[in-house]
Length: 231
Image (cartoon, rainbow, N blue to C red; front, side, top):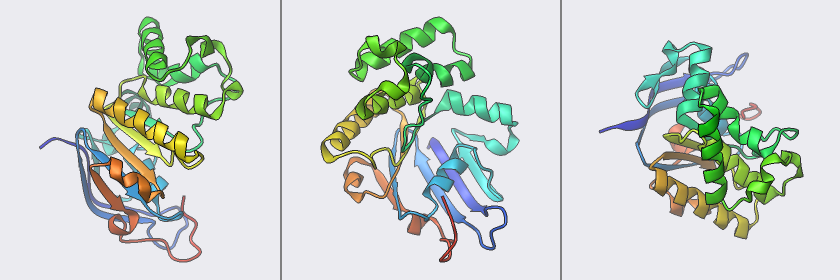
């Protein structure tokens, strides 16, 4: 069986913390699977995603992403691996406000070394599939509506055609209609590309869209003590 993500005996403790932030015994996610992770604020959801992406390093245990371990990679190799294989959709979209739509979408592709012509072709194809007018390409990100920013964030996450798509509370600022529209967009894209989705949210109503769901209470044997500050 081929896994997109494998975690074994993971522990992580924030610097200067007295207790582990995360202790995860085991988690496996198959390629093409859709995993929903839910939990309250402070339960370690974002910390876990940062470990999966190699933005943080576990104190012990092993995390394999597409069969690769971040432990053996330099920082530059981690950046290249993320840009080539992992797409992110963040809660606040994290677009660079003073850059154009085109430049925001192209950032991961430039890091991965994709040539200019391929970036342009993929960008226009993504805009078309996300129902965004190509006239927006030169517009600054901070001049877009929330819905447009969301679609640009999805396009940026997909520009490198990643095998894994990580979404961190992407619907928290959306009303019900926009939330349904976003989920339809995300799942249609996943079905077309066959990517693996790791979707984190406190909204359990969204679980119906996913193959597998886990709570941080299930995953994390070291939930933070009262008063501990966890992202």
